[in-house]
Image (cartoon, rainbow, N blue to C red; front, side, top):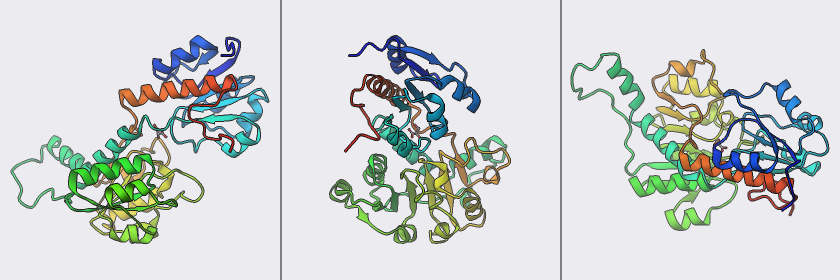
Length: 328
Ligand code: DGY
C-alpha cells in the first residue's frame, strides 16, 4: 500500500478506537477532540489542505467545503450509512471519492425501529411517566389501552437492508402482513415474507404501522406531511428511524394532537437536536430518542472500521470498501 504517513487528514469527531487507531497510525491525522462538532468556520479551517476527511452526518460537505479543502482532497469518508449531508454529485464532478458504512448497523437500526414501534403502540413511555408521577393508584381495566401487534399490517417505506430486517422481525414475531413502497421491487421480501409492493396511498390506508427506512433526497423530503397522515388509520403508529426531514414535524404534531393517527416513535427529528420548545415534546403519544439506532458496540465498531478503511483506500487511490460514487 502507498505510504500515507504524510497524508493530511481531519477526523471531525472521535470515533471508536477500532477505526480511529487505523487512521492515526497510518497518516498525519488530526482528530477533533470535543464532544460537540466543530463550528463551520473551524471545520473549514481544519480541512484546508487535507487529502482526506472523515466526517459525521452532522458535517455539511458541500461545494464550499470542497473549495476550501482544495484540489488535493481525494476522499470523504462518512461515518454513517446515510450521506444526505454530502453533495455527492459535486464530489463526483471533482473526482473526490465518497464512502459510507452500510450493513454493520442494519440489525441495530431495525431493533430500534421495532422498539419504537412497540413503545409507541403500547404507550410504554407515557406509562412510565404515569408511574413516576405517582398516578398509579390501582389496576385499571380501561386505562393505558394500546394497539395490538399480532396479525397487524406493517407498511415499510424503503425496502432496503434495514426495511427488510424490520419486516422480518415483525413477520417472524407477530405474523404481520407486510406491504412496502419502494421504487424497486424486493424479490427477497416478496419471496421470503410474501410482502406486497403497493403505491404510497395504499400503504398509508392499509397499514397499522408505518415504518420509514428510505433515504433522504429531494423526492422523499417531507413525504410524511398533513395529506399523508390524513390517509392513515386513526389507530396507526408512525415510526421514523431514518431521517427527520422525511416527515414535516409540524404536520406530525398536529396529526398526533388531533388523533388523526394514534402515536409515533421517532429516532430522528427535524432539526436535530429537537428544539426544546417543539410542541412534539408536549405530547404523550410521541416517543422520541436522540438518533441512537446504530448505537450498539458492534455497529459502532463496524462503522468505525469501514470508515477508516474507506478513508485509507481513498487516500491511496484504491477502491473503497463501501463506495457511494463508485464509477460505473
Ligand atoms: C446512519 O448511519 O445513517 C445513521 O443515521 C447513524 O448511524
